[in-house]
Image (cartoon, rainbow, N blue to C red; front, side):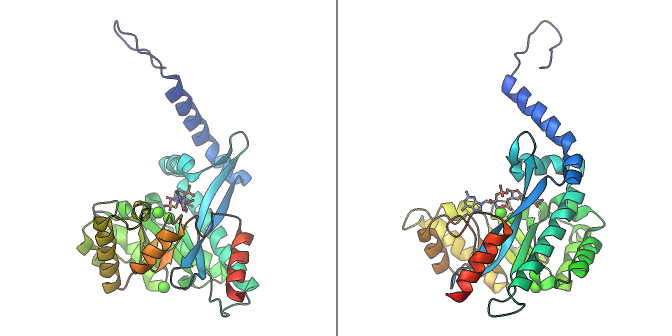
Amino acid sequence: AKSAGGNRFELADPESDARAITRHGLTTALPAALERGEFFIEYQPLVNLGDGSVRGAEALVRWLHPQHGVLSPDRFIPLAEHTGLIVPLGRWVLEQSVRQARAWRERHGGADALGPLRINVNLSPCQLTHPGLVQDTVDILERTGVEPDALCLEVTESALIGADDDLLKPLRRLAEMGVDIALDDFGTGYSNLANLRRLPVSVLKLDRSFTQSMQQFPADPVDLKIVEGIVSLAHSLDLTVTVEGVETGAQAEQLRILGCDTAQGWYYARPGPPERLHELALVDATG
Ligand code: C2E
Ligand code: CA
Ligand code: CA
Ligand code: CA
């Protein structure tokens, strides 16, 4: 609790104090946690809305904290961003995920009927401005022998709002190599739709709020129009549309009718260990 100067007393807020202490504790524990291997990655399938086949997965990092148990990324990613640890942590996530993508490929016998499973990895804004991003990515792809085409980097719409050329340059380099760039949480920011043409992105990930508004049937007509508009604009710019947070079959059906290409959500599978994705993809390929 802070003690107030003067003749006033400030009431302590025990809850916010506890949160601050945990935050501080977690922040200082981050570097050692990375060294000790306390982070792990769960993978959530990305499914083709047309035929239900598994196209790949998004890598989602978790922290198995020795005292607090499994912590979700919302608890520690902002702390890692604040201290700069996100750069080595993000590099670790990228390398693990790309290695995992290669392992899936090998178990599937290469480019068979399944097609190569692709891997989506989240990039935080600090990684975007870090000078090593392109070289680190190239190195990881070379070390693992995974082609750039199999990788999609997800950047939030808000990270690219007002982005100048310096910020976009590394993303352009990666896109030229064949890496896909996805605009994550799309529709929550205030970016100018015309601005999309300037960005080296090939995928729009519609924010979960749009999926949630497809809950009732029929969905809100205004929301339907908005999604319809986004999808047609995206397609006219040669972008694919992925929807996240799909929890029901009705939502999936509605979004499929609206022309969305790929879906992700609990309706298909929760994020899980890498073996789970292999099983899902295999079931899918054999019938
Ligand atoms: P995101 O990139 O928008 O990831 C989607 C989030 O939605 C994930 O939360 C996922 O578990 C959750 N989700 C998936 N399907 C459903 C569903 O059907 N319903 C609902 N309600 N939620 C669903 P998660 O795993 O807690 O990750 C939260 C955020 O943390 C991510 O949001 C992303 O911004 C960030 N994050 C995760 N891993 C990384 C990473 O390796 N690096 C960076 N920089 N950020 C990461
Ligand atoms: Ca994401
Ligand atoms: Ca590509
Ligand atoms: Ca998202």
